[in-house]
Image: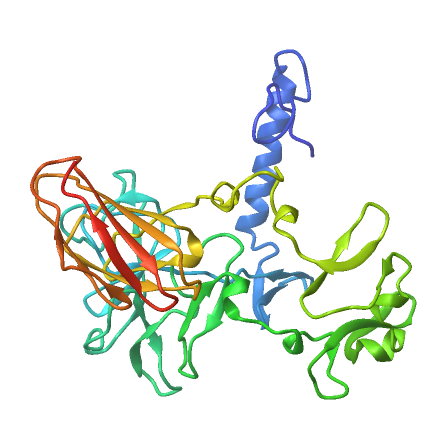
Length: 388
């Protein structure tokens, strides 16, 4: 018997467009009456349930089967901290521990100020479900971010352990082991993992690496192959610069460089006019001025390779160390700007030869300049202004 529906609903679309007739109504009642009588007479029922892995099958009383039905695997997202917290936003699937019992969250909500295992939404829908009990409660100690975890196969052997995946991390980072200890990993960008060519699965080191090696692709056909190291002479033979079609070497001498003359590369001495955009420019005009801001943490390091003008706005007493690029004769200017009304003491440390510390004073937005000359190892102070 088919049920006649006047309106569309959860049961599906309407089957008639007009009001049901009395006979149609009677047929609907008769259909349900037949079904109820069948159930009361002990119709088809579940006789047994079998399980295989994460699937279950129902054996019915009429010797037919229903299934197998695959059961999902519950995932618990343990909160940090793992103990229940008042006025906390809990989501479905979160897990926490209260006393000696671990709970999962059945319904998203913001927790009350006091824990109640039977707390609900006022419509009979409980917030929590107990999933297991720890005899004797939680193990002692533990640290922030750890969760209770089985330590051995023995019953109730629970210890605080760090999660398999570290917290934090951003897009495109990967987990890297920091030591041989279990769970000791942290998020890193691949470049921070210091991977080497020899670590790549498609690289074959043959023969052992030596100075001057290059990496070349060796094809095994159909786009398949591997990378291997080789001396460049083994690839192209004993090729010299002079054999290249766009290079002409004429009686080379010490100190010469290759310069492009518009048609070919030729050997010649490097002239100052080769470096200047304007052939009449002076060495000072050719020099590019570079300004670099020092970090405000202490100690800070002034590295002359980064420029010749350095700025600093200290927020604390701090020490500045220097690292020379080895270029004797370079001039370095340090511009210090005050902020706030607290005097900061600047100490010149490693590789500085200075007249002493500098106190910024208690006036906001004052500027000091300290000038140094590089002797190739240390920065020697040659001038210092007062607050401007």
